[in-house]
Amino acid sequence: MNINDPVNISGLTVRFGSRTAVDRLSLEVPKGSTTGLVGESGSGKSTLARAVAGLLPCRGTVTGVAPGRVQMVFQDPSSSLDPRMSIGDAIAEGTRVPRARRAAEVGRLLELVALPAGYAGKYPRELSGGQCQRVAIARALAAGPELLIADEITSALDVSVQGAVLNLLRELRGELGLTMLFISHNLAVVRYVCDAVAVMRHGRLVESGPVQDVIGAPRHAYTRALLDAVPRLSPAASDTERVRRVR
Image (cartoon, rainbow, N blue to C red; front, side):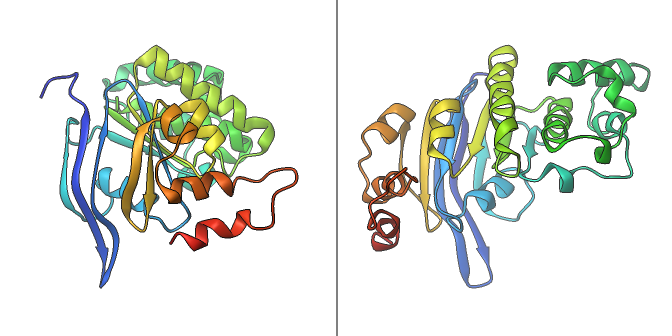
């Protein structure tokens, strides 16, 4: 495997009993870039992410990333951190450095996400939601991921801290050359964070391409409906119904 090879998701299918949640989906994520994944709730975005991360059984292949080198940052940081573990222990758990160097590595990772190294001794209950999400990002980075999946990571945060977390992701991508799959329902956020975007509907990919093309000049009716449904100061009464009409 060449280190510059893209992450290729090919023919990925996830079924829950008789229901197909993800249906033969294929997607390429170029190395060092961020690809956004958008769609309504229930479209299969998070299911796809968990399958790629190895958290759900699936059919299909994921190539371009070594086993164990996919890490996820989840939507709710308070539920993804063990309240009984200190911040330092939570981050150290995923590091690949010798035990004698773990404290220094934890300090480095905390500083990387703009938190003081002294936070290693704190517990999740002592931190704000935004700080906990930064810890979750640091913990994911501790494993040296070749693909980082961010699943709605700002939707559970106060609006006042969402921008800071998004800016952090952009900075980390530039500094570390991260390859990311960024899941969001917020198209403005996707435009800000991502290089490319893929649109899911009923477990299938309906449109993908550079973010400026897909959001600026969408080809598929469903993508146009998602854009039309973005809240406005004075939305037309019919806008919120358009997504339903193209199902």
